[in-house]
Image 1 (spheres, rainbow, N blue to C red):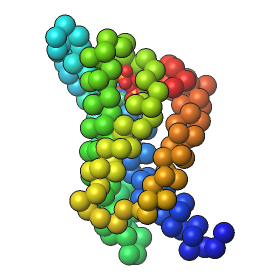
Image 2 (spheres, rainbow, N blue to C red; image 1 turned 135 degrees about the vertical axis):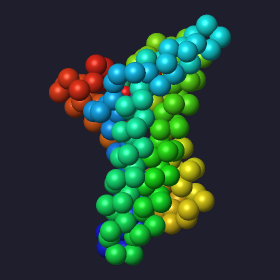
Image 3 (cartoon, helix red, strand yellow; image 1 turned 60 degrees about the horizontal axis):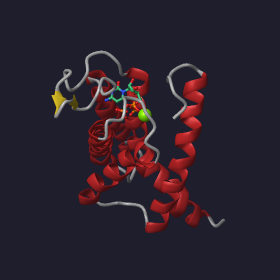
Image 4 (cartoon, rainbow, N blue to C red; image 1 turned 90 degrees about the vertical axis):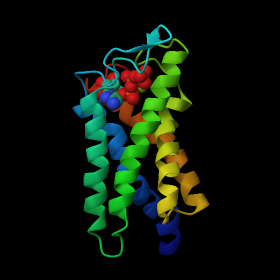
Length: 169
Ligand code: CTP
Ligand code: MG
């Protein structure tokens, strides 16, 4: 593949969305403890559920900021500072919206919700990034969606084997 195409289709899209990946993964490692919804119920069911914690949220937001800051040090990519912060917020918002929807449907914390578990954080991270520009090309975004499906399965299987996660999804 010609190096410019490789950059446009794969390298830049991965670089661009990297803060969102890190923000999404951080709570699995650093989360736990007090639930974000403080046990509050909404129409008889948990608002978000016990698995969405304050520490998890803070670790996700911080990861976006820290990764974005590190990436902004690459000459020509100073815009990643803002993108990182915004993707941290987007990824966490998507994650919480997913839990909110799962609880409304009566699904238990940690139950499998297929596409929503895999992609909601990503969709929100992209949507939140739009106002700040520098988005990858359409093909690049498609590559990211395909890659995320594969990575999600792989990282969750590994996290389960290493006993970091209770369930392999
Ligand atoms: N986690 C956390 N705080 C968050 C998000 C996640 O502590 N804000 C941790 C929890 O230990 C959670 C794990 O990361 O079990 C995996 O997160 P996720 O798959 O997003 O949540 P689920 O356990 O599937 O819960 P839900 O059904 O609400 O999506
Ligand atoms: Mg889950």
